[in-house]
Length: 185
Image 1 (spheres, rainbow, N blue to C red):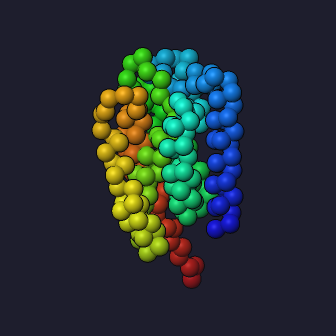
Image 2 (cartoon, helix red, strand yellow):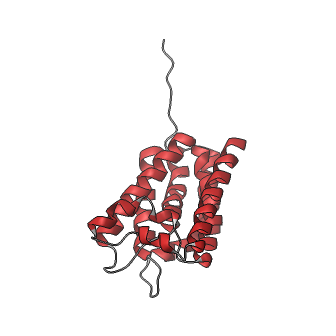
Image 3 (cartoon, rainbow, N blue to C red):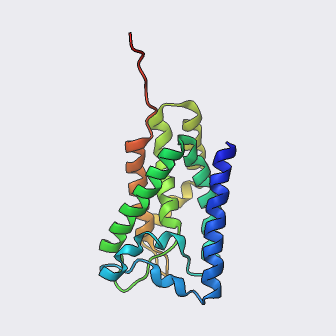
């Protein structure tokens, strides 16, 4: 548990440092968001989840990201890293291909929705009671997030939410199972 808290603390500090730099630079780092179908912005699928449009955007994401990171870390650091990388890459590519034209998609909510999808399904797949409780708790406390996958007006990337959620569910199918070890006889 202490190791997981260190991971969460590191995530918080890195994102807070990037937010401070972004504020001090007049949000110039937001250039590194995902602009759909722009070849020069394709590599930004890795930087977009680290950036936020404003401080409200940052604060609305950081605490949920930290809570969900802690919960996904219950599946182990290896699984956490696989899920995170998978969600970042697949969601980033899907947003790059299908996101609103002329828009700049950024923010950790793509990863949050990936973790949300993972956590909702992973407890049921793992068949481990403590992880099932996490899935139920996430459903009860954060179930309203599901409405974020629907198109809305404004500057909210519902595409990032939708694709993050879908690929989070897929990540659960891929990596939530508790390995069973058979004894050699």
